[in-house]
Amino acid sequence: MSSKKNIYVTQPYLPPLEEFIPYLEQIWNNKILTNGGPFHQQLETALCEYLGVDHIALFTNGTIALVTALQALRITGEVITTPYSFVATSHSLLWNGIKPVFVDIDPNTFNLDPAKIEAAITPQTTAIMPVHCYGHPCDVEAIQRIADNYNLKLIYDAAHAFGVQDAQGSILRHGDLSVLSFHATKVFNTFEGGAIICPDAKTKVRIDQLKNFGHVGEVNVVAPGINGKMSEFNAALGLLQLKYIDQAIARRKGIYEAYRERLEGTIGIRCLGDAGEKVANYAYFPILVDPDYPISRDDLYQKLKDHGIHPRRYFYPLISDFPMYRGLPSAHRENLPCATAAAQRVLCLPIYPNLEISAVDEITNLIGTNSHG
Image 1: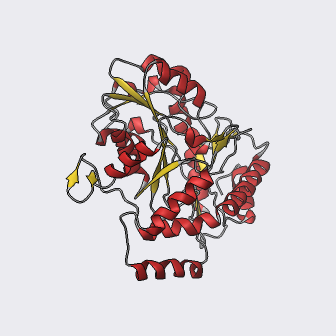
Image 2: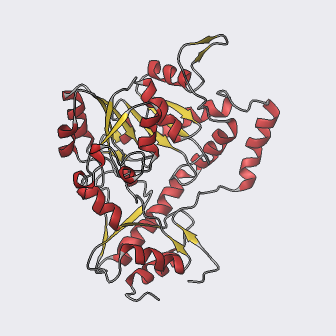
Image 3: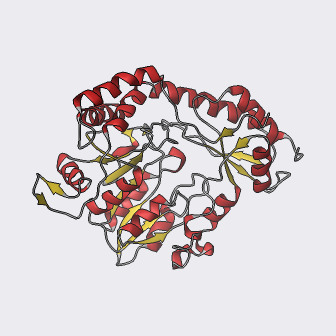
């Protein structure tokens, strides 16, 4: 592949510019830029309908949404979570003065392993924060049983899981709260944005207060909230994106299937299992570079980059390896063998709606070539 054209692991889907101009003109004309304006309200309603949920609170980004979700449930002490995620997951705990307790992942799904959770529970444990990694649902039933048995709150980091369903409906209905990211790299994006799925109207009211500095009316502040509001500009982008979301996911599915077909039988390359009966969103395409592949994961990473392909080692290093976490007893690598192995072998290949199948062919041909050239 020519180095003149770089292909990155993801690119945001951008609807036609001319379709956004009327939204922009309306923002200018009504002079409402933020604070729950008309586009913000329209997007909340539209997302509830699309996702099959009753209440949703929009945010400026997914990280602030995670921070606020923890505040809304008054989480303190220790929270059990995964080391195999983007750092925002555990950073949201530190921002709330909460101690993360890392538990290993399932080697097949890369999600938090329910069989390892109970051994990590202490008298200080107040909640569990799993991640639907790559958009593949966690074992929600098993995790919920543990939360119920120990009277723990359950917050899902569902940053990757927009539109994902199981046999009963939206995966976002599980737990006390689920948190979405609408960052530009996500399946559905508002350039920057996020949301909390709320189980009832009362919880949404509290969350809406917390994301607006804790204000109730003009003169009363009832909690130490934050500025987490989504702007009208971002909400308008979301409304436009939502018109094309099914088309974008269908395109992702085609690329996902093309990768699986072309990589089948490649010695030393293993694809993660698909979502099976669950409805996937094809957010990522991770492969595992096994020891019998002719070169290392990092050598393959560099080989692709040398040809203008820019994959990502999601997630490497582990969260637990970063300086602010590695001193925790639960962060020791001997406690996290599956997560450590995954971080050393995983490589996420480019997948986004506008990626040409010819590019998939070139990428898979490079992976199937044993030399460094």
